[in-house]
Image (cartoon, rainbow, N blue to C red; front, side, top):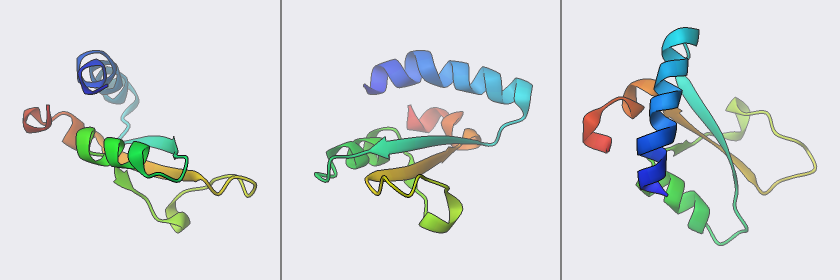
Length: 80
C-alpha cells in the first residue's frame, strides 16, 4: 500500500528520475469498474487521471485509465 510505495518504490523512482531526467511517473490503472483502485491511486498516492488525448492505450481495453504523478510532487515531503 501507501507505506510500501513511499518507503521503497518512491525512492527508486526519484533516484532513476534524477539519473534519466524524468519528470513524470505514469501508471496504468486497470480498475474493475468499481473505481476503488482509481480512488486509491488518486487519494492515497496522489496520481491524477490523464485525459484520453494524452495517453496511448490499446483499443481493445477500455478499462485502463492512465494516471500520472509529477516527480516534483513525489519528492515533496508533505505528501508522505
